[in-house]
Length: 465
Image (cartoon, rainbow, N blue to C red; front, side, top):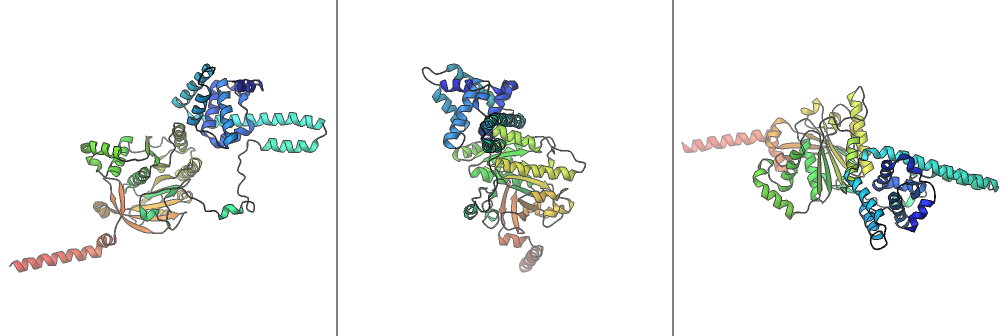
């Protein structure tokens, strides 16, 4: 406990002017955003906090970073606190304050406040560091140490800045010859996940889009992708802006258990047994009404999930075209372009792949192949996306459960390929058709087959007579 008293006496509690709630939000930001915490480590001292339990937590948090060059998880931090403050002679009041604070963070996180709090706190600490540098500079000038003043002020200006300065071409030459590992989440379809196309699936920080006319199966595709990730033990966060959470959940049930969505109710025990017998990842389904959720809404919800221990492996958004833009424009295409740009940024910030869907234009409804030119309202959506998959189904194909996937854009491998697929909407499943099935779809072969059947029937009648 003497360590904390020393910290308290080291200087004034500079954050006291902001109040208790703001100070607690500062530490919450440190716990959630490790990159920001590293910036703050250069400019903030634990004694800046007015509250003793925040001083203690901040000291432990930064002390761990100094020792291991990474920050502890909240669970590990709790264990560290429990180990230090449990037993005879420990500060029970401080321990209880910490426990209550952690419960408040978990029960009412409100991460939408954090961007403002982080900006305000970082600016304040940088100004404080600059003031301290000025004070030291005066002493150096009085001692005629002018060169040291220049170095000191340069350092004061740079503290609190992001650490990465970019790729130094000549200094970092070895890095370019090391194998870059691209961490992917599979689609569950081998012909897309193969090395020459997606090389394992959609990668972290990438945006994948399936483009199709209305009613073609965009939502089923997104469930297919989410289910494949669950089978890999990944954490999936699925946002729906049209279908309810329960209906989306039933589609996942049908895909994972291979039971038709219409038969789930009669097979409730089979569904439960399946989940007990099989190890899957975690699935969070969140519904927002159409045009009410923006990318900032999704960001805040992901921050809240992250704080509660749900770290997403893949984010699915059904679908981006019906989201609300963070900025109003006269033309809808500008709003859609902004939404896709922000989604791409979100994928990078959270280091996850994001799958979404886009409505095709009218021409796509009758097209044999849906491509980039069919992305409705804003062609710029294609420019932002890393992987674009066109899905087309004509009425006669819908009736037979057929469709076509076209790789319209691919930053990770080949594109321009078309695949004939079977689409089981009762189970939200896609599978590749074999050559015979594709041949049977050809109108010429259908006519030939029909004509042969007619001739065979006529021959049987003639033989019967």
